[in-house]
Image (cartoon, rainbow, N blue to C red; front, side, top):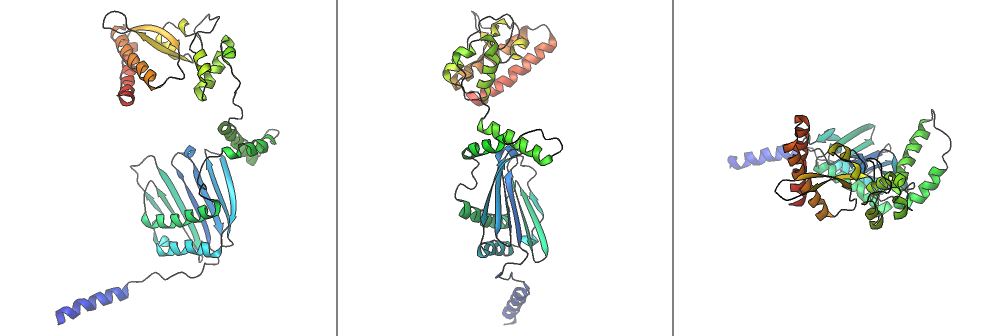
Length: 336
């Protein structure tokens, strides 16, 4: 009998000595919450929520260094209490200050800071999954979605382009020592790029078939979605070529000139025989599909290999050989 009673007594004493987390029924008078989250690459987006015990909340989401939009809403005491209950239940105030997986380079990060009952705690999680932290984060995200809708975490800002264009157009003068003005100017530059306010959209094939316009047109087609007609026009030599330059690729007579000239690519020919030979430069096909791209890569890596083989200059031969190996690696991963 003693053998049975003793283990039961030990279990009873153990359980009675284990503190239980009390149920939180009231929101502390000094409650304050800051939640931040984002990707390790700032261009991929970030989010921030700030809310105090009065329920006044500001949710900000952005991308890049300065482009952002803020949304205000009111949270009830009951809604904030649910988050605080989750924090207490998941022992937020006893968690480590940081959880991180140093072996993961790309991913995301989140940070929660809560002030309550005269103390403050901040926990950061970087490329890591911490179950208790995630439970609290889920409660916060649910509040944001409940107030701002299912698209609350969407980073599609196009609907604000007209509004921001009006706002940014009101900026006048230079920002000398005004830091706030400088930041706003930088933000407007990011909005201008995102919304393509300054993009040239009326380029035509006729306009781009003029020598002095070729560089502008090539630049546009590299950075934007170029029309098929405009792209096709850029595949031909510009009239009036006198030197190796954008749109005048046939004037480029060696690899270095070709690869340092905007809009030009190396073109390899296969004459009779098995060796690949350098055939000069051609205007770049800016609208190449995968088949064309793979065909180009296949020709290029074999062409560079042949150039390395026949090149008498050891340094150039080494460069050509390295290019061949790199291009072959791309070809293997993308085309096979």
